[in-house]
Image (cartoon, rainbow, N blue to C red; front, side, top):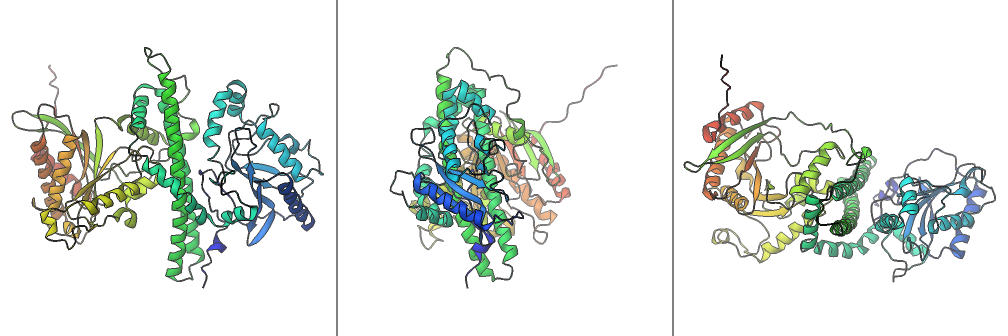
Length: 625
């Protein structure tokens, strides 16, 4: 029995998501098909152009409802040698109206390219296609020859993109930057036209129909990019300098990051839509068949996501390098100020910030630690995880979060979050945890991605000798399983407020039994507080109950209050133990409760804080009569 996956999804082209294939879902087109004689004539003209001019040209009609639709063609248009587009294979969609050749066709670059004669939505402003200039005897070869000409020599009389046209005419060097940056991002694939992958049309068409094969071709380049992430100190120093001293450069970098986030969201939306459609269409199939088809979809899109992120990292680092060089070429005695801007970001990038959330409970305290030499710190009690709370994409909140992360990413006041995990080293990828989803939604431009970091930790775990306590309970000292109380750390630039994640290994017993100070997780919590004191992590978010969610059967109010009291007192003791009074900074401890916590439990925990910590009392103004 063949799983009818290809009946549901048909590969018909690509979108602006880097050097990757996109599988689109077929849609039923209600317009009238082309007459048979016109369709036959188009096929002959496309073949004639490919044979005579298009050595690397690709053209294929779209398939809809298992039949070829000759009114819409997906093409790979090669850039002319000696031009800015040399080496690129641009993704082009050509649509023919039902009354063609009475009316002209439309040429659309999908995704749009930065060109003076290409509208922002990708439509080409080609004079030969204007209704007033259109001639019914115009052939496909003539159309593509005209397109090739304006690609090499833009038409100044018919501008379509104001920004690209201005830079092309007034600042040619500036115009080259986005073209060179996006030239290979807008290609159908990453296969250089002069490489060993130079193939006949049929072989390239096979790539259209087998994106998984294409994904394997780029795995090597993706892996190489991940290997460069951790040792690039120059990049880290350049970014930190720009974030601190060049507001204009920082705006440019954040704008690019927001655009990258949109690209990833678009690809994830396609993946989720395709999976939902599969479940709806194949509901009569067995669970194994649906699971197998779903895994195939996820594997395909995961490869595309890896390739997309690899492209984004290269482009981001190239921009940082260019901006840093420009900044260094300015007078060192002049503090660089932002260029006049109406808004830091285009208005189209700033949407509503309304995001559905549960009822938010948040209380803050100022506390003192120590008896003789007191140190002052901040304490917050929340009923939500402060890192994984979502904000609207491209909203003001999203901009402010990314701005805050950029300013503090390489500073001495980092934010760490304690994430409870199980013993399995693949816990995040197998369970699709909140951390996994948060990292998946946005690009990681500064460090290795979450999965790569976890793979390194797994490799390190295999070669690290276990402690005597662990060796007594483990059958294999090189086992890849963690033990309760272990802590491993990952770094992130795409989580907004938090830059450090402490993965505290726990087990099921932690949510069932009463916690004591001898529990392994308490040792792990103590080590986390010590690391925070040693490495400048001044904000730490702690799960107060050391559970991810509340179960009414297991966790009544009495159990919650006993657990909260134990964690409060333990954190207080650890803070005092590791405090270095001569240089202790002001810390912010954020205790967060599960989202499904009862409001009464939250308020009881809040009332407990002044009894455990020394807090500042309210000040009252004594108004004299």
